[in-house]
Image 1 (tube, rainbow, N blue to C red):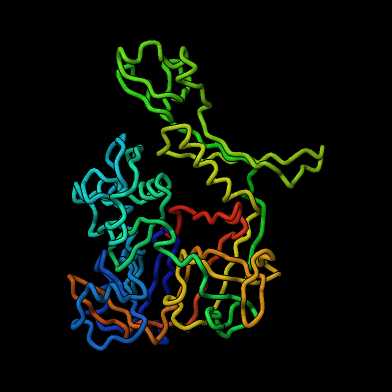
Image 2 (tube, rainbow, N blue to C red):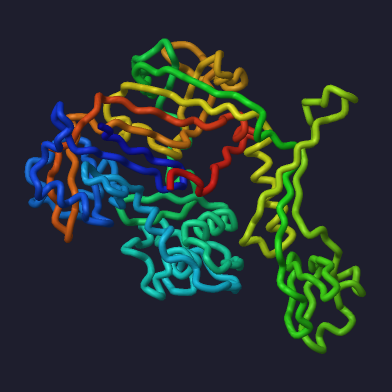
Length: 451
């Protein structure tokens, strides 16, 4: 039996909560509880403590106070529990029906022309599946600059969300069950660590909490290592009747890519400012953006030359050369170090109230290269070389001190009595920390995850 959930940085995450069984394998829950496992898209709420009568608590309050909210999507031929993903999985359903070239629009201003409302939540066509913009996005969105883009046919709103965040330099998170927040990382997550993970110290300090029973494991290889990342892109065709601004990229009738370096008018206003004939207005570009390591620390064993490892990353949303170069730079940060997937196990009580996916924590383990000699942090009365690491995911066991509620037709039902609980414990996925430490920048892994 399994009873656990995992949350991921800018990804839906997943959960599996099995019902208890007898020694002979028979499900112990009554039939009306078993029937609930067939309720597709029901909400599953894990509360950090016991709830005496959930029907007496407003549903919105339960979502706000929950340690976890998931969407039950089930598994084939399995009625023995609840399985599914975080609420962001609802953004994978209503795919873009046709290619859409987006004019420049704000991140969010409450209208159907804004990127979050129209192109991610798709509120204007009633395809938001119950998700709404959160209070931070509503409060801050109107002041953001306007940006354009492209959404290819078949693209999921979750993929569009990842591209919107990249263009605006934002990150996203789900709060209170159905609220999507798109904002600066500092507004969504704890970037100045409040917790310390070391293998030898469980106790708390004045301003820092120690994660109890912290233990690290790691896997390291060079399979995905890259010295260069290339990102192909497809710009629109040049149109004589269109006005172009600096940064716009087009493809000439002969297949050559040009980037506008000086704004020029449309029609007769274009005059002689035609790509290929006006070098002061247009410059030729490669059909891909590229970013390369300035220094390669590895050589091949035969002639001693630098190892060349090129990764090609498709970017369906990129329409300009600058777009492609930006994506290449972000992707290279993910692959310019060997893979070193680090996980951290801890027995800390109610970790969800202290650390969540997206937060930074301090960590120290020489064996796993988790230390920073340049950043001494006061810990237990003396300076310590603690590394700042961003938590990419948190897997939490659903233990007997928690409550499990299932919401069907807006009615929360407590199924805790029949859950096959696990022993308390959490696992933090730290990813490959050194890959996200270049130039002091912490880079998120995008929208990939458990769906």
